[in-house]
Each structure stands twice: as structure tokens, then as C-alpha cells.
Length: 287
Ligand code: GUN
Image (cartoon, rainbow, N blue to C red; front, side, top):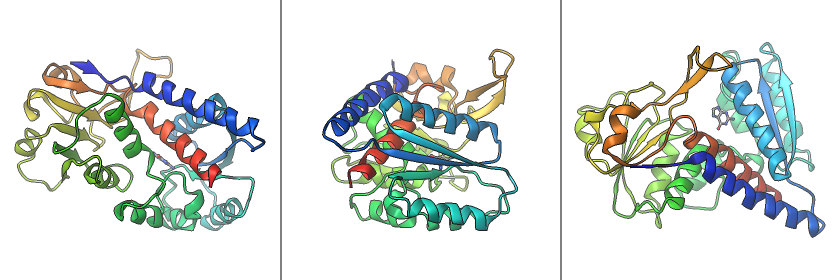
């Protein structure tokens, strides 16, 4: 069994991005600028955004964090999006999700200029992905494909089963993996899927993206499977300084002995998603 080290791979990719930024600056261009908009104080969102800002610093990007309290109005948030859309100094920006209930998330996403939508959540960018056109691919699916490539995991003709059909992970990943050049045969499973175990047992590559800790058990996979665990549920822990730890969707103890490749949680897919965001921002800056 080979443990897929997302932390190490992401460090390598960040070093490559940092080199590109150095060359950009040496040739008289400005450093890419990413803005993150964070609403409220959700623990998970705070951590993710802090990692995004720190990663920007590591690769030489300029970053700005715009914070709002939970009670910010939809109108005010839309005004901020409009301002960022029209700010020539900003190459790309993200609005961290989830947003408070009184704000229509989709409305905010659709207000973002697709050319600055480095999350790849705007329907124009999702549509371009479906059409096989150049686009900003959302961070988690792009990070997963990078991991498969960097570990030379065969995808052509292989059966990839994805558990989860979210707009952020499952759905775009299914499209990406079936594209020419990657060439997987893809099955998307979800909460209404019947005979789930029978399907997952046929997977050469199994992606778990449902947000249910330990959902994938040993009897659900075949020998030699590659397992990608996207789950990052925060659970209380007395073993960590913060009092929290991340749990994946895969029962690692049961599944890892049967797997040829497997991602850990933490340290698997998570660090890769930030790399994809940085890559998208670099791409936006070059446009
Ligand atoms: N919430 C969880 N993942 C993401 C992400 O990739 N981007 C944004 N904007 N919010 C998220």
C-alpha cells in the first residue's frame, strides 16, 4: 500500500508556483493578488481561509482578507463582489462557503465575474468544464487529478466510482475524470443509490466525498483499489491542541490494507485544494 502524501506533493507544487511568481516579478509584472471574503466565525471556514492566506504568502502572492460579521446583508455582500469584479488590482477572489442562511449562496456565486472566479463555482466555469473548454476547475477536483497524475496512477479505461454529487466536488470531478486524456469510466453514487456496496466493489478508483466520517468500510472495496478520501468532518478531540481533529469518509484501518494507493486525512486531498486555488489565481493573473 502506498500512502498518497498530499502535503509533500502540495509543497512541490507550491515551490513550482513560487518559481513562476519570481520570474513574473523579474520580468516586470506584478505579483498575483487573491482576495478572500469571509463571513462570520465558523471554525472550519476560519481555518481554511487562514491556510489560503498563508499559502499565498508562501508563493509570493499578494493576498487580502475581507471579513464580515454573520449579520451582513446580502446587498452589502453583493456590493463587495461588484467592487472586487471591477478592481483591476484583484486577479481573483473567493467568497468562503457556507454563508449564513439569510444569504442566497447561488446569487453570490453568480454575481462573481467568471474571469475572477478562481473557485470555479460560477455556472459559466462549470459549463466550460462540461464543454471541455479551458476554465477554472474547482479546487478539490483539480487537486485530486493532480494527485493521481503525480503518483502515476493509471486512469485510462479504469472504473472510477465517486460517492457524492455536490457541485463543489462530486459533479465536477465526474466530468473531469471522464475527459479525453484522463479517460476514466465514471459512476456517480449518492444518497439514493441502490446496492452501493456492489458498485463500490467494482471501483479501480474510489472517491469518497459525502461528509460522513468512516462511511467507506473494508467490505466496500476490492483488493488493489486506489482510494481518495475527500471527507473533512471536524470532530471533537482531546488529543489535539485546538480540541478538534479532521475525520475522513473512509475507515482507514479497514480499507488501507486492501488498497494499492490511499490518501490520509489530514494530509491527503486537503493540502492539494489550496494548490489548485493558487494555480487558478496564477492563471487569472496571466490572462
Ligand atoms: N467551502 C468549502 N470548500 C470551499 C472552497 O473550495 N471554496 C469556497 N469558497 N468555500 C468553500
